[in-house]
Image 1 (cartoon, rainbow, N blue to C red):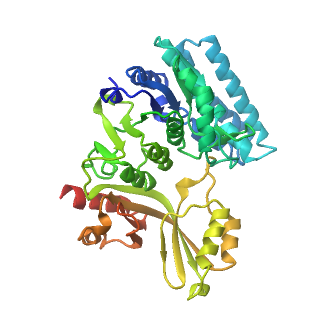
Image 2: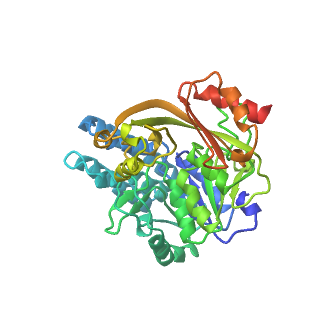
Image 3: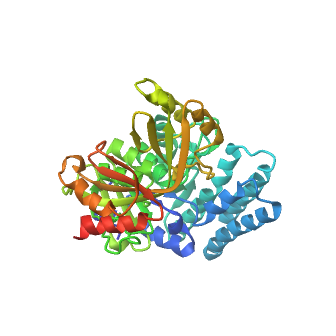
Length: 459
């Protein structure tokens, strides 16, 4: 039985399945059983099958020659055809898959002459298009009416290819007109991660954007719950691979979950929480491989609000140090700096300042769908015009997540006991009652996380 069906039978549940959950026929069949166990689940959002997006990203790279391109296309096709074979190759499904694979080949060839991000986005979208067609066929095979739906008809975005921003009001209108009427008759399977601008050109929401897609559609359709089905049974107090005694969390608040998502909890895309917060839509995170294990509910309000909830880790961080004597007793330096970053679509995480220095952390995992990084040469040159710039890589951000952290005595003492043997590049605390953040060397991060977990959760 679906975990959500044990609640109060919400009128509409949106279920999202990640790449490992739709990796092959057996995985899709298992996920289809989860969907069909709850009659309220009428909309399913899927990622590309595991490995496909990485292959597509490689296809977009400039150094891919014809021989490698054909190998990549063959590998992608094999993943789709393996699922088709298990389905018995229904003629209409096979024709749709062949059409997308053919388009995939044409787009990859087009990149040799035109390396536009618009073409890259359309190419990257083909993985989700295939998995939605195949997953819908698996549901039909189990005797339930189902169809795939092109999310580009309703998920309207701007034209910032690679990391498009959604148009919330337009999505609500279009979903009401074109998607909602279908839910009464079919279990609809659609794509995560992709959308379209007002001219109908394919856009993507950035790597990991399928969770965001599910939440945006849930918001547009006034759903009661969003299920995020992944390969772990909910959210843990930290990554069990780093701390063997990490334990699952039964329920957390939106504020705590937003902090965890922002600071590295990989079961959630950081932006997923935003539409849920706006409409107070509860979110469930569970394992598609073991739905009977339950998972984590994320709700607007929860009964238990401990000081320490979790320790989150986000790797691959960059520290940007800006030094300028112009800052000394002057005005406008920070405004100019942030205006420059905004023009380059750079989002700053943490910031510390002194009289003549500003240090900013940037999340390199926030690069666009093609995997291109954040710190372009043009950005660094522009910043260098009014300050000295130093970039430090190979850093990791560790966040202690909880409640009343800024107002509870003794928090820093316990944390600093753990950190006394490690070189800490930055500490941020006080801006939020829900977190205390430290920046350390990436090589030291696993042992710092484990030590913090032992001190805060196991002692």
